[in-house]
Image 1 (cartoon, rainbow, N blue to C red):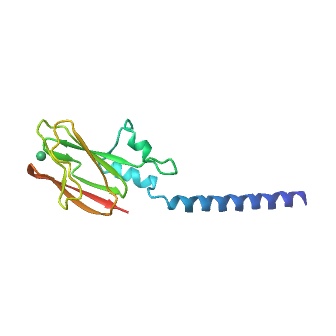
Image 2 (cartoon, helix red, strand yellow):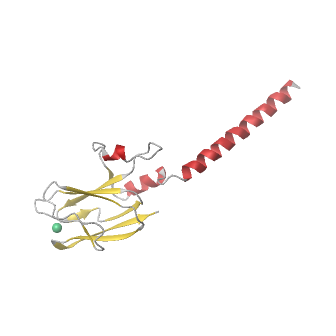
Image 3 (cartoon, rainbow, N blue to C red):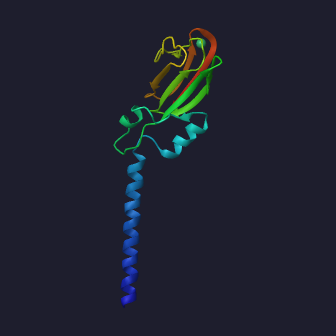
Length: 150
Ligand SMILES: [Cu+2]
């Protein structure tokens, strides 16, 4: 009798835990950035932005989850990585390591850094899904691409 009671209490607790877990999972799916997708973007060549800037903290969503930002190096007249797939809402910061100036200019003009001297950075947040080709307007062979996914 008492054992049966204990068993049914255990079943009720298990059901409650499952329901709470399901609600938690559903609420997480509504968030824009899924953590496991973040790591895949890094694996494709982007490095996590150093957390020194205040932007990463300010832009965190209500969950306290920081928006992702990725660095692209401009070095030896090459964008590195030159091809990158990111999630919508990700910020990319380009930094020029060359002594000569470069630009980061979208073919559709949706972003344009203007002339960037050595050590200058340019950041753009991609809020619309699509494929963005961009070039350095000073060096027509410097071509690169960002693919923004949902
Ligand atoms: Cu250039």
